[in-house]
Structure formats: C-alpha cells, structure tokens
Image 1 (tube, rainbow, N blue to C red):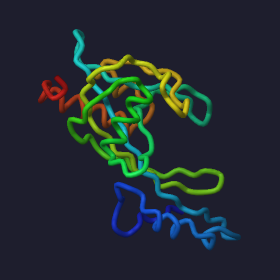
Image 2: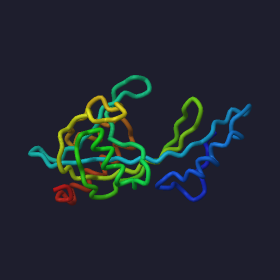
Image 3: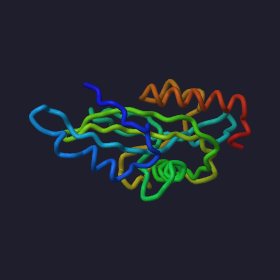
Amino acid sequence: MPVPVPPGGHPLKVDPARLRRRTAPSTVGSTGHLPVVDETSAGGLVVERHVSGHRAAVILRRNRAGRLEMCLPKGHLEGAETPEEAAVREIREETGIQGTVRRTLGVIDYWFSGEDRRVHKVVHHFLLRADGGLITAAGDPDGEAEDARWIPLTELPDRLAYPNEQRLATTALQVLTRTPDLVE
C-alpha cells in the first residue's frame, strides 16, 4: 500500500522535527507497517565541451543485486547545505570534477524500502559546467562509486541505468542543443 505524500509537498531540506514525527514507533507493529523517513539528495550532470561534442561525468556503482550500473553522481545534503552546494560537492567527491551550477534540470521523487523503514527520497538534479579536475572515483568518501568516466552526452540517455536519469540526460541534451554556450 503506497504511503501518501506528506502535506506541504517536498522540502528542500529535511526538518528534524518532521522526521521524528514520521518515524514514531507507533507506525511499527503487528500491522507490518514500516516507519517512513524523508531523505533529500542532490547531484546532476557536470558537462564539458570536448572536440567530439559535450560529454558528462558519470559514475559506475553496484546496485543491491551486485550488478555494475552507470548513474549520475548524487548524495545527501550535509548540515545547512543548499541542494546546489550539495550537488557541487557530491559531483566533485564522486567524479573528481569541479563544477559550477548553470541551471536546474529536475527533481526525481521516489520510494524504496529497507529492512527497517520506507524511504521517501527527493533528489534535486542540476546541470553544471565542468571547471576543472581529473575524472576519478578515488575521492568518493563512501566508496560507492567504483569508477568515474566521461560519456558523450548524446549516448547518455541510452547508457544510464535508471529511466528518470535517462530523462534528465535527454533534458540536458535538449537544453545544450538550444544554448550550447551554457557550459562554455
């Protein structure tokens, strides 16, 4: 049975009081309901212009089944970070590339279940211009990214593991077709 979206929509940051309310022990018990936790993350596409066209930095990580999948770098907001600040930091940590946010690409909103809770996750994605760095997953503090690499933006919608991320890549391609200097 799906859990309804909370009143007030999806916050950019998690309100600790709201988390405590949503994870009350009364939601667990003989009914089999798991507590619900809200999580907010940010990431996106950091893009550079290359002689062959625009290309984006992606990561390769293992999914829960152990298969290697290509996805966009992203992670949780830390402290008082804005989604934009978290996206810049997460992309730098997971890919080694320093970027500057150029525009919002979209928000992905989904649910998943762990052993002890249901998670409502909201991920803010941005289009960033690559400003420097070397592509590598070696700086990922969580060790989730096994590899990082540049992929031609035109190939990205077909190569990303998740349909929502494929749609974001298509949006980025459309935006850069109209305004290629956005990442110059």
